[in-house]
Every structure is written in structure tokens, then in C-alpha cells.
Image (cartoon, rainbow, N blue to C red; front, side):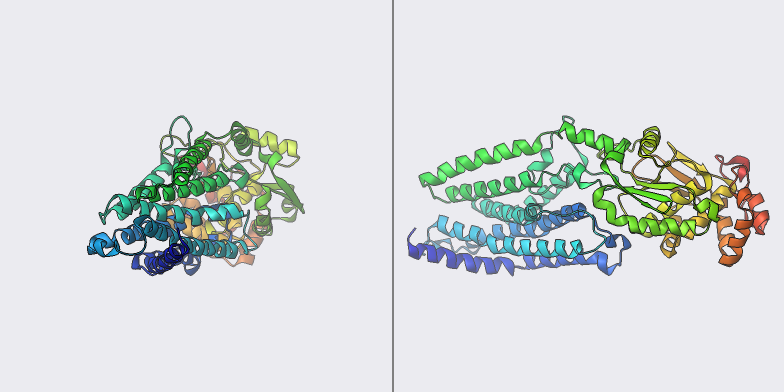
Length: 519
């Protein structure tokens, strides 16, 4: 191309870039992206105060690619077929630029959009990462995945414009990509191949709760290289289809195709056996992967990236211990973070397994701590706080480790456990109300993606309400005076009501077969 051709291509590229950015579809995508990012803050979601940066990175990638990338595909396709729809191709053909040069201008028009998308991603990640409660980090190459996905999809729209002039092609292509991406989350091939990695943006495996970043199989570095080479390949093919037949272009297309194929194969390979082994260790015996802090008589253990949450866990634990007799509060206790990292979810592929409590007990014993209360890899909501408070209170009251299955907490122990848990703070008390609204009469608390947990019957919940109606100091003095009796497994709810001066008539006759006479 001559210098005049270069100038003309750049000038047309600037015009098309402006038209691309101000197109109603693109403006709608920008507004939708801002709305999606702002909604949690507007709703004041408590869990949003404790972000996990690896999860943030995935959500940012998905939203950026689907909204801005989808809009780029649709709008760039419409831009290329504009002349055909306006029947102005004969007029355009007399211009100084050849068809392939006009297509090159359309491809260059995508660059400002990709740069702007990158700026939005960097700002979004930086704002969330500035939160002192944020755990983990996002590398620069991980942040680049979303913008390059936008560039790839936009280039795909230009190529589609050279292949078909049907207006519906763009929206249909976006719909098919959406279905394929969502389907990749739930359907995985039995041979372990990660075929979803061939899509512009992937969500990877889905777990019941977030897993530590070191256990995730993201391969964002390879995926970024895949997006770059695929974008180059699509651009070159589009130029060839548009009539540019230079020898170097054909050679570049072959090199790009080989690169795309090579990187694609690396991406789809099954998970490395060492990562599978590390996930099994994290699920069954996580002490070797975690760091621990001893604060007074309680030891807190977590994966290194989740260490900032220990302060919040301690506030919940101290809230529970503040309501028990001093000699009980001084006993050694432990809180350990657990996650089911060995079983990703998916239709026909994932399971919620039984808790490996025997392995947990051995692991805690080797680490020199008592059987640990479970802390999860999600935190911040009232339900999370009440869940930890309840599990911690149950350990204080019963002295029992987590059960393999759902353990029914019965009789007086159920009442005292719940009373201690709601005393851990206003948020924990609110968590009880939220969980009661979600369920029926009783209360089920499962943890960490396992089948383990504790359950409370409806009569225990009703008697708790009667206990909470008493002034806190009055209830505290009555519980302290009868503590030994109230925490005995054989003490029934009726006996607890008599000891605490609560009306026995408040206890409903509907009980739970798992508790039997203890109700």
C-alpha cells in the first residue's frame, strides 16, 4: 500500500471506530455492563464486601466478553454489510480503497473498543482489589483475556460480514456462543478433555463453593495466547476472503492456524495429575496447604490467600465464647477452612460427597489442634456468619467433631447452641431469620459442599424465640446457673424450659423422629 492508502485506511478506521462505539447496540452493552457491576453495591450485598479475586476475574471476563464482545460481533457484522443493505456497493467501488483495504479499516476499528474494554476491566479489578477483605489477586494476563475476547468476537463479526449479508447472522452467532458457553459449565466429556477452552471465554469448572486459586485449572496464560493467535487467524482469513492474496498473508495464515491448533490442544488436555492430587489433599487433609494463627485459646487455619478473613472469623467465635462460662470458654478450640475441591459439579460428572471426617480428625491430630470447626471459602453474608457461629457453638456445647451426614441437634443442646449462635452478632442473628425464610419449620445447615452439617427441629426454634424474649442479662444468668444440665445430651427441651423459666406450653407437639423423646 502507498502512504496515501495507509492514510485512507486509518481515516476510515477512525470513522468506523466512532460509529462502532456509538451504535445503540454497543451503548446498550456498555450500560448493561455498568448496571451488572453496580447492582451488588446498590443492593448492599454483604457478601460483596469479601470478594475472592479469582471469582471476580471470571465474572469480569464473562460479562466483558458476552456484553461488549457480543455487541462487537453484531455491530461489526452490520457495519460490513451496510453497503449491501443500502445498495450502495456500486458507489463504494469507485473509491480509492480496494475491498480488502476497507475490510482492514473495519478490523482496525475494533482496536479502540478493545482498549476501552481493557481500561474498564483494569478499573473494575482495581476497585474491588482495593478492598482490605479481598483475597487472592489477578495477574495482568488474566485481565487481558476479556478485552482480547472482545477483539476476537469483533473480528468474527467482520468475517461473517464477508460471508453473509443476512442481518440475523450476528445475533444468531451470539446466541449460539452463549448456549455453548453455558452448556460447557454443566456438560463435560467423559474423557476429561476441556473442550470448553476452545470458546472465546470459559468459566472453567464449577464447585459448590470457591476453591483456592492454586487448585483452579484456569490456564488463562494459554487462553490469552489462544485468543491472540485466533484473532490474527480470523483477521488474515478475512483479508484473503476480501481479495488480498499477497504471499506473506498466506504464509501468516498457515503459521497462525498451526499456532491456534497447538495452543488449543494444550488447553483441552485433561487436568494434570499433580493438580488432581493437590485437590484430594485439600479436600481430605488440608493442613499441609494452610497457615494457622493461634489467638488466645482458638487456632484458626486457612489457605494463605484467605488469611485476611481470620479477623472476621475471630469476631464471630469471640461473640459465641462471650456467652459461655469462663472455664468452658478457656478450652482449646480450632477453626479450619475446608472445601470440596475433589468433586467439581456438572450434570453427570459432579457429586456432593460425604465428609471425610476420619481423615479430618487424623489431620487435625497431626497438626496438634482439637477437631476443627468448619469455616468455608465463602464469607460475608448473614447466612455465612450464622453458619460459622452455629457450628462453633455446637462444638462448644457438645464437644463433637463434624458428622459424616447431617447431625440432628436435639433437646436442650439445640436450644443452647442456637442461643449462643445468635449472640455472635447482629449479622448472625439476621442470618437465622434469612435461613428460616428460605426453609420450612426446622433448620438445616450444610457446609463446605459436603453432606455434613447440623439440623435443628421446629420445637427448638420456637423455644429459642421464647428465650430471646427475655432480657439478655436475665437469660445469661439463668443459663450460667444451669449450664451443666443444659448441655447434657439427655436434657430435653421441656426440662430446659422448666430450668429457664420458659412456658412449656410454647413447645409445639410436632417433633422430629430423629430426636425422639428429647423433644
